[in-house]
Length: 87
Image (tube, rainbow, N blue to C red):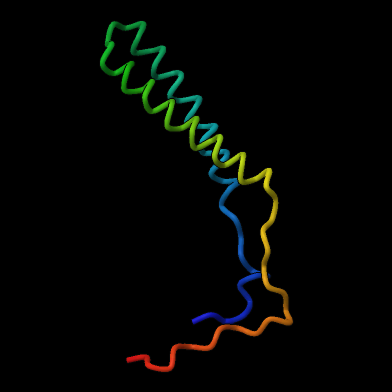
């Protein structure tokens, strides 16, 4: 059930996801280079594929951060009523 304080107490995980994605980019680049230099092309390919996933997530997160905050109901909007037929 909603308490009504969600718009003021909600926190977005986007900045944390941004820094985790940056960390992932660093490790996947390092892993791809290390495996390619040591002669493990399969592992290098796996790290390269993971790099693409991490970069896609990073672009998604940056896009959402740049969109800015979305509408949140203010204090004048009452909390939702609980369902009447709760069992």
